[in-house]
Length: 144
Image (tube, rainbow, N blue to C red; front, side, top):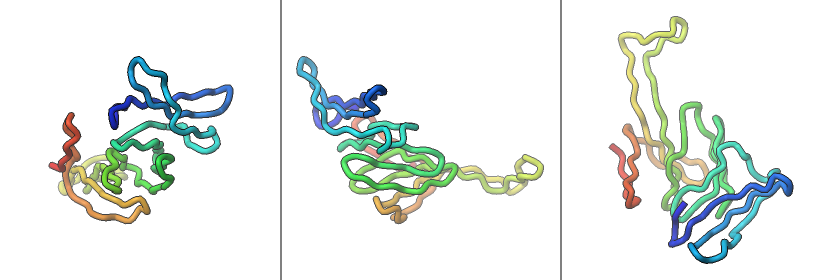
């Protein structure tokens, strides 16, 4: 990830059981920013996101942030975290209404849509809005 004029990457050392976050500038030595033991993080979907950047992981039930601060947010089955910005976590969710589970088909009242749920780091819902989150290459974001 490129953020704050540096390239950042995660390195897994399986022999040592450690994950290290490095920052790097071309033609300079990489510098370790922080590290975690395998027992301190969930390795599934471990990634770097955002600017400022966060080290996170996510499974079907929980979003975990490990750096620069530690917090956890419970997720629904159809939710995924797309963005962290200004102390808020932006979660995208796809919603199906009017689906007949027993017959595995749509009813006459079937509706499919996306929703963006914004939460604070404590997991409290700040807002919910129908739509998708779009992130431009320059970092600008909007919900449409």
